[in-house]
Length: 326
Image 1 (cartoon, rainbow, N blue to C red):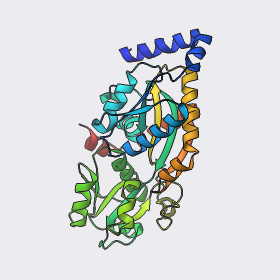
Image 2 (cartoon, rainbow, N blue to C red):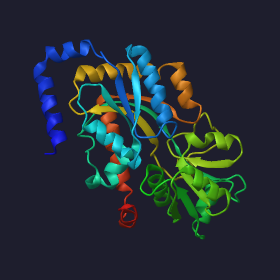
Image 3 (cartoon, one colour):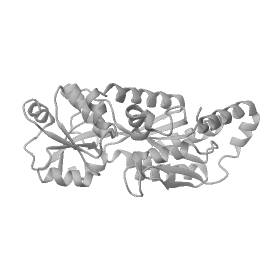
């Protein structure tokens, strides 16, 4: 058994035996600042959501929640750091679909941590749909036009990385629609959008929320999103499900702690996360760009993660596995 898993198991056993002692420990929690590890650079990706939640938790906990940016490897560096951290509730992770669902589904042997075993679930924060984008001057006016054209033409789609959540989401669209499109990976949305505007690629498949501003400004068109229903923030954009292409995966963010974190500490964090998600300030910040808050804590969040891993695993074909393998 790996060292970090043995330590987590030992910590869990000690917590169970401690009984009242563990409760007494949690009664004073938190007695020092909490570190929220975020797998993005400052200002990038989910860092904004991490800071939003850190600030909201700090207000009700009466203790600072400090964001610690550990970018790299698609968030896997941050996840590994937290998996190996002391399970005392003072180091937690901004988990996301990339490092706790996609990576465990596509390359579990390459990860230095295991999901869900190495983590204690706190709660889900939000889900943001993935979307199919085209340039403002694209010949395609709807997702149906793209899907139909892909049956007779060799179209391309850009993503921000091979094997990343959005790439896997588009592979699911292709499978459900019975089409083929050539994947063109980029290192970031900026270069992908530049090439799409220049006509080098036909479409861009990415998490919708960070790009809603560019859609509202008329630079991009968003043709369809993943998920079960339309977003009130972009009510004119249909879901793939409406088109008969059911792709349930989303980009999600949540909080987890190292395995073995005492249950009373987890309950404290769960309670305060729920409080944060119930505030108008947090809800409005999440909803303005087509994401939606999702208060799902503890074991229910753990099942959500396990089910999401299974969804991505079902999408892996031999050809796709060959593409995403290092």
